[in-house]
Every structure is written in C-alpha cells, then in structure tokens.
Amino acid sequence: MFGLTTRKGDSSRAPEAKGTVLSDLIALHGMGQPSWTGRDSASLTTNGFGRNVIAYRCVQMIADAASAVPLILCQAGERQYDHPLCRLLRSPNPDQTGQALLEEVYGHLQIHGNAYLEIIDGDQGAAALYCLRPDRVQVQTGRDGWPSAYTYGAGTHKRVISRRPDGSMPLIHLRLFNPGDDRYGQAPMQVAGNAIDLHNTAMAWNKSLLDNAARPSGALVYRGEAGAGHLTGDQFDRLKAELSETFQGARHAGRPMLLDGGLDWKPMSLSPAEMDFIDLKNSASRDIALAFGVPPMLLGIPGDNTYSNYQQAVLAFWRHTILPLIGKVVAGLNHGLGLSDVEIGFDEERIDALADGRLARLDLLLSSDVLTSEEKRLALGYPALPEGGTQ
Image 1 (cartoon, rainbow, N blue to C red):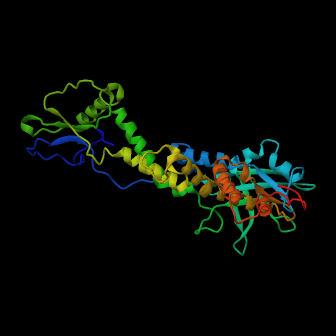
Image 2: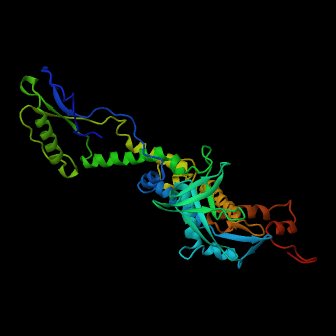
C-alpha cells in the first residue's frame, strides 16, 4: 500500500549535496515479488475458511446441501427402515446426528481433500462412526506403499489405528482425486489458494484506503535552502512518527497540515489499473467459486452470465457438484463398512432442486405414444396390473 514508510536513497551513506528540489523525500518504492500464503491445512483453514467470505460460503453451501440429502439403505432392491445400519446412519454416535456427521465429512473434503471416519465395532458390526480431523491424521504406508495404519492425535497424545485381524481397516478414508499423491487427496481450497490470496489482499487494500480517508498517500518533500537541504536521521524519524500519529487514518481525515519552512506535500494519485481492485476482487471471487464448483450467480458475484437464470444455476450446482460428491461418499461408506447384502444410497426424490426435472421427465413419459400403459406403470415403479384390471 502507499504509505510514508521509506526514505529515498540509502541512509547509511552520507548525502550528496545536489541542487535538486527532490533531494530528500519520504516515499514508497515499487512492488516486489508476490507473497503467497502456505498451502498446509492450518493456513488453508485460517486464511480460506476463516477469513475469506467467498471460500467460507462455498464450503458451507456444499456441506449444507449435500448433508441435507438423506441416506437410505436397500436390500435386494427394497428399502430398509429397521436395519441396524439405518439406526447408525440416523445417529452415528452419541454426540451427533447423521446430518451433522455428514456436514463434517463434506466440509473436510472441501478444505483438506480428505475425510476420515473411524468405525467403532460392536457385537453386530459397526456400532458408531466418528469423523476425525484431517490435520491430525497421518497415513502410514507398508512396504508395498499402500496404507497399513493411521496415526491420529496432536502433540504427544497420539494413537495408531491398525487393521483388524481379518485385514480390514476400522477407518474409512475418503479422499478427492490427487494425481501427485497416493495417500492424500487434493482439496478445492488448495486449488483456490492463489485466488483466495488475491481476494484477501484486495479486501486489505480497500481497508487501507478507508483507513487513509479513501485517498492515496503522498510524498513529503524537504527542499531546504535553495533546494539543497537534507534531513538528518533523527529529523526523518521524528517527522515520519508525527505524520503517522497526526494525519494517517480515517479519524484524521480532512485535518489540515501545518508545514515548517522547506517542507512541501506532493500528493500521489492512483493509476486506473491500481484503482481496479474492485474488478480484481470480483475476478478472484469467480475463480474461487470455480474451484469449488459453485456457480458465481449463487454467491451474488457480479459479471457472471453463464446461466440464463438463477434456477438453471441451482440445477447445475446440484448436477455437477453435489450429486457426484454424495455418490463418492456413499461409495466410500459401502466399501469401508464392508457391506455385501445391503447397500447405502441416497434418496434423489427428496431433493427439491431437482423437482422440475422430474416433473418434465414424468410429463414426457405420460405423453409418449411409444410406450403402452403397462410399460409406463413399470417405468414409474408401479406393479403390473392384474389381468383384466383397469388403469
């Protein structure tokens, strides 16, 4: 940001007596290399989910929408209601509902790229499920390079989750695709990291302008006698401190400046490119939303015309982001729980966002002249009519 922070020239060398009107001034040097935040779990959680409104909203929208879809259990094509696994899905542990547990799972996948569900065994299979914090889990690999155990804990308090005697793992590791790592998934938050940094920096830039009365700073020029004077080190430090305490900040906006002889204020203006931080912030917002698979229209980000209306954006969000994510988690649950005679699924008919699509398909089916009435009943899931029965 512009500010009265540096002194032109090297203060360690004796000043040269040159007859220039800008012989001694306080100014800002040009920009250096970009500084990106870390991509570790702690940095992503703090700078992404904790500080960035777009990233936070994307994670919450995905986690809330996906966890609201109820999971069901089917056996031989018939839905089950009293199976022990049904009770486990509704209440996976004494402290959480099934929806709360799934919200954690989906949220961790977006932030960390990994989600871990520990299985607590009972007399008749899985008795409880607990979601572990991904930043506290380490994958241990065997000689073949595949996971052999998991270490969970923080600091010196750690425990190892090993395979059961039959070779199965009492932990379900859900991870997103990562071509560069066999053990850990890659999170959308990691991919959006640079855009999150840009968005956070644009917000800080805006805040800095407001703190300085929405105006850029300037340069305080010391002319001296005949334009050949120089400030001593003590004079420079005292002047900079007085300027910061007396004139910088929103509460000092509009205060008149009283200058001693030889001092002249040269305001610095912002170029159009530098003032374009609003467009930069919106562009970064769209990149963040793109990484998470959330249509920018759903976040109220201006400048996005990908979808003709809000309803189409909602449908795309469910079709391209939520349903594939639920399918991945459901497949992981079926595999991790070792289910064979029963299968966990989800009830797509309960998703209100897809209702219009279902009605359109139903109308197309009923108006079809190609199918018979009997075939239409079967397509809708109704049993065949008895011989001689009427529709």
